[in-house]
Image 1 (cartoon, rainbow, N blue to C red):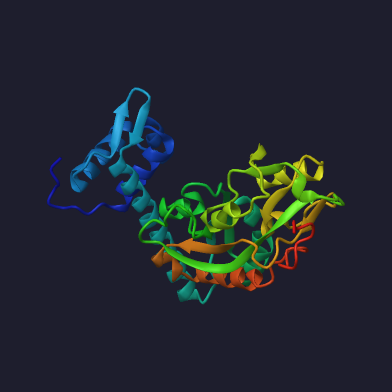
Image 2: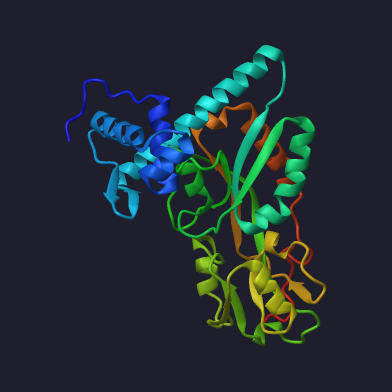
Length: 312
């Protein structure tokens, strides 16, 4: 496809690309934007000429982004978000006011449950106009960082150093090291003899070397959808689990927590954002609160002491 001499896309063209991707069709996008279908079609064709690539596969069932379209839509979301930030921060600076408007956060389940609530409470005390919008994303594959890369989130609370590399053009910083511990039915005399309960998000590349060296860990006989289900199964006596600190926060009284020793595995919890948004006032404020709370993240029994019931 031949590119036009003017490759610049206007914000209205970017909004059309995002709407088509989000709604799955030209007609649905037209309805969402208050335009006619022909106007949406014309805008997409114009964007394709400017970029020099086909952005959507058209069919009877709707429109689906091509690989070029996925890249274009991700960048479109990020550019549109920067335009929003430009307006909000310029308005705030002119009036000497704080941030007003949405702050989009992606987080894995245990971070959303146990880390974000006090962080957002402190953030809203400092920035009353902020409107947090939290999206819980499974930390598998591209995980929460993928939401930032795709322009759906301003910041992601993520586990860093996993098997999937971070997308180019993102900023990642660590917040704290999260230790793992052994969860088991409280009072069990030999918790390491129990069957293993696991879930898909557990044990990334940061724990695999440790995991492989433990000959007492069996193959998982029970696999759950999330860490909350794991805790319920363990507390009911169906097995033991090796879990990170955030997942063990507020564990029920029926769950015992035993240290895994000084060489216990850990994972690094951090945040991911874009270089542009990293400099925005609201993201800086959120990062300050995350760092402040991250210093005190702890779980009883996960202090790295000598593990109870360790085979000699």
